[in-house]
Structure formats: structure tokens, C-alpha cells
Length: 84
Image 1: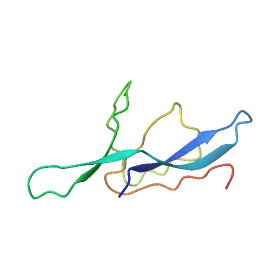
Image 2 (image 1 turned 45 degrees about the vertical axis):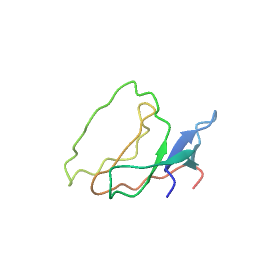
Image 3 (image 1 turned 180 degrees about the horizontal axis):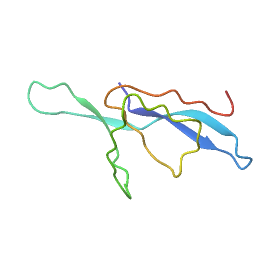
């Protein structure tokens, strides 16, 4: 297993694109009895905000207000990029 995430970004013309990013990682041992973990370098975080959204809420199309990591603990989302 290698740490990775999906990056959605916009070019200078405002067209959004999807990119699969794989992070370089090393294998590190955890506690006894726990398999080795794939550990990527830590990244700086300027702000962390935890948000819970009503499961019935369906936002319309919108552009993210800033660069952000979105982590789903349950559920998910459908994201659409300009390049398909």
C-alpha cells in the first residue's frame, strides 16, 4: 500500500483537472503485532477544521473557496472536473 490522494486543480483558463498523486513513503514498524506502515513525509498545515454535514444536504455545483484536503470518515461525494 502506498499513500496517495486525488488532486483536483484548475489551470490558468479556469478548467479543472484530476490528478492521482502518489506520495513517496517509507515502511515503518508500528507496535508489536501491528504490520509495518507506509509513512509519507509530514506536510505543513495552516488550518484544520472538522465539519459534519447533514446527510440529506446536497450542495449545488460550486468552486472550492481555497486549497483544501477533504477526508471522508463515512459516506462520500461525487466530484466533477472540467476535463471530464
